[in-house]
Length: 233
Length: 181
Image (cartoon, rainbow over all chains, first blue to last red):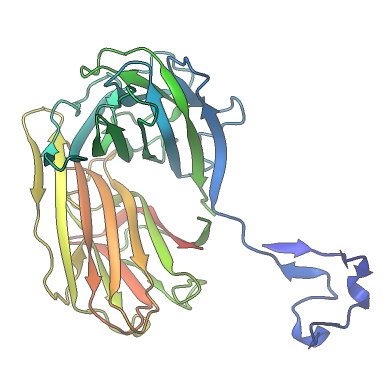
């Protein structure tokens, strides 16, 4: 990337003969008005949604509110920051839809496991979670273990990565890691799967479910979801 | 955590894809401490093949630095009759290609995607740590989430990496190299 520089501190480039004793001859393109600029951050923030205290869902739709969810990027990240449910022991989940879709019920096959440990050091585990996965299921895909809201500091945070949602050829791979804190226990969940849809996906929605993913469970009452894109070029 | 896109390699029926410091605008030196390789829909020519990597410390003239690794995965199939969370072995001072992914199907809509992170490849003191998480849609219609990690057991700078499948070619897909500031 090159930036055109015309003046530095009001001094025209053409009048600068040296910077910090480095002469014009040793600078790249000083008098041709071109420098190599600092590379742009390839990890681009796209949009943020913040719960207003009573959101049944939070989501991102391509072309709405500054959201880009198309072939601009091949890799998208959704960062969850202190997501808190209205109802105790709720589970963060997502669904997606194709362009102009409204049902948010795409088929997902997924796999999930979690590790947990409590503050009393009385319990720990590493286990496959067969009640969190789907086999071409069209329910909301769970991403966490139970998120509590009994005390003020309970919530969940993590990242969901979605690959090439705009592809018209491939199913859509995704993977996530989310840590939930509640009931004096930390529970980290690793999920991965594919949206079994070769048409482009351009919208995603997050909600809380009960233990049964078919049961959406009240609201997201606080927290922020930030959406990023990873540069293609 | 600013990231800089360094290089994208696009497969077109390639037996391997390689990143070599100093070649074709690739940077893999002390410019960054952390490098990320993003795999986007890597599609094998043969069914049920595994993505691999191997390192070089001489600019790609030779590959095969002793590497020790660990691999585990979680899987679940569309038929809902198989789930697993299991250790899958790993390399023990191997100088051959190192498995970093799971079984990837070659149906038209199948591929693997994920991220491998390489830490401080230019260090002349430490071994070179790497971690990877790659998701595959397998030939038998499984969602397979594979976690690999290990170290390239050399205190010399690693300046090239090569990716391939254990059998056949990389028919399609992109590998993007990012530097993390």
